[in-house]
Image (cartoon, rainbow, N blue to C red):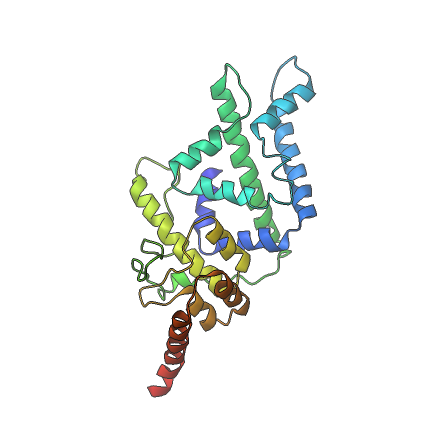
Length: 283
């Protein structure tokens, strides 16, 4: 399940589309109903496979101490980010966060390996179920939105290291350049290489989020520190410039209001936009 989740998440703009759906299309009531259904199915499946004299209620209480995010975090109005955070942790290359997520249980037992195994199974299971649910909606055309083409695949943003103070580091590559899975084979890249790939990919995702008009996804990436709002490409083009270029007014308003932008930055963007549209006329 984890490898499937990992490969799908990093393919093209899949992660952006999922996050946009999660933040903007799935209301609180729908999210709560989904969590109650999926967690009950998952925990019932585990409970039915356990042979014990302990009452079923005690078994469920034990399982809820393992998947302790349910229901207080998953089903709360302020817990919208919890599942996306878990998915991002599972598919990224930060081994510390990965281990903390899968070892964070709220119970003590002499069979700690079993508990950790159950924690791993439930966390990956609920994340996989969320992505599978979304993919089913897309397949059945219930989620009827056009899939935007990833700009990072076109080569337009062959970004180098940051070109201004405060921007993120790394050379963003294609959406197809996935970071190595936490559970991939022995031939996977080193941790340093994976971290660099994640940084590159997150910068690419930020530019794609702008061109797609996904304001809430961009807000999430900024809040989590996945990318700096002042990042630029190898031609010095900023997120604000790209938002202007693609006429994404909602994104532009958000970036201007949230980013520490000066009048000089705005003048620079206007000059670059003017030159971009004037150049074909001069040929």
